[in-house]
Amino acid sequence: GEDVEQSLFLSVREGDSSVINCTYTDSSSTYLYWYKQEPGAGLQLLTYIFSNMDMKQDQRLTVLLNKKDKHLSLRIADTQTGDSAIYFCAEDTGGFKTIFGAGTRLFVKA
Amino acid sequence: DTGVSQDPRHKITKRGQNVTFRCDPISEHNRLYWYRQTLGQGPEFLTYFQNEAQLEKSRLLSDRFSAERPKGSFSTLEIQRTEQGDSAMYLCASSRPAGGEETQYFGPGTRLLVL
Image (cartoon, rainbow over all chains, first blue to last red; front, side, top):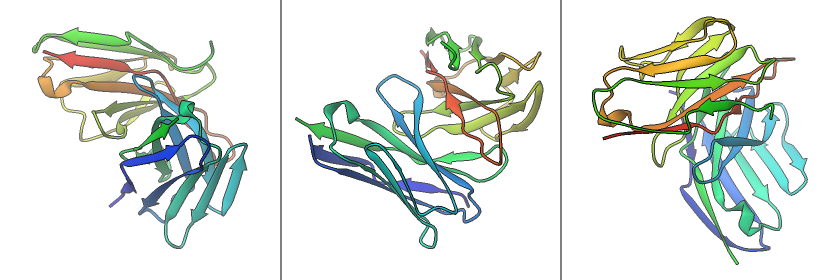
């Protein structure tokens, strides 16, 4: 079945890079997304990658996609305390359906 | 503000009461989605509209749940005879597919607590 898995927690020091990993199961996914959720708030789209791409960079964010292994990662360079949040990986399985992971809680220590 | 808005942001109700939530999507978006998010989990799909037509409903959406989008703009989600298990964040998202890409933009959510 369709499933998206992420590690639950990540702790980094301010200024270091953060790497959040995700695996997905549906090989037909066309788009893969990273969303950020701060406490008590809705989801904010950070970036997305089309399935025929290997990498996408957007300022401090780098998305890497390994389609063979169905592995997606989000790298945040120079992590700041304001980056502390929950990060959700999501796959678009076609049509209307987007499947979300349970989220990775990023803690940034000053 | 041209983002997705939801009302109310918070709702506390007693078990057995009915509640209704409203979502206003981004104005040019023809697709609207409802999700439920419980503590420690990602959003789970509930239902989806294209314009005014409700095209899909999750098995999570019991008979006590009903959603409408009468004019293809705002949508309402009603929960009848609420149960404690309905306590969750209810998220609305909207999208406008273009060129094979469809990014969903989320509202701030309505947090429901059933006592």
